[in-house]
Length: 124
Image 1 (cartoon, rainbow, N blue to C red):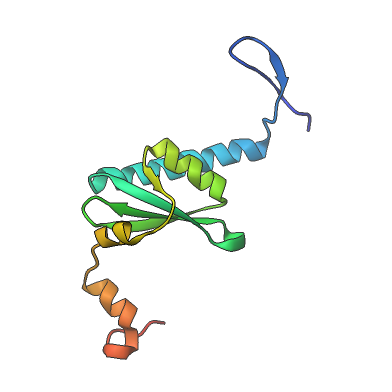
Image 2 (tube, rainbow, N blue to C red; image 1 turned 180 degrees about the horizontal axis):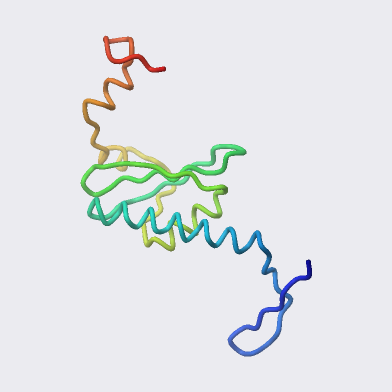
């Protein structure tokens, strides 16, 4: 498969890197950005932190302004960062105490974290 040629706004032709992999990455970034944006909208805004999780890629941890939290997995830290930027979220360098203090957990999380230790449901 031959490389494509891209033209910049000034009209200069440049050797393109427009491959199927690039197009797939763009679709992944767009999909993740939509998901992250929807989370932020539902929770009154959100902050994100990206953590490398090995070969699997990167985990995007989200904490909403209302204390709701969630996460998403991206194939790489670069893809995750692009999705967070595109969604317009604040990207934090670390999941520090200030960010952790915003997280609100409910009975489900507490029983899942405790598991058998305090008579919660079995963690299978």
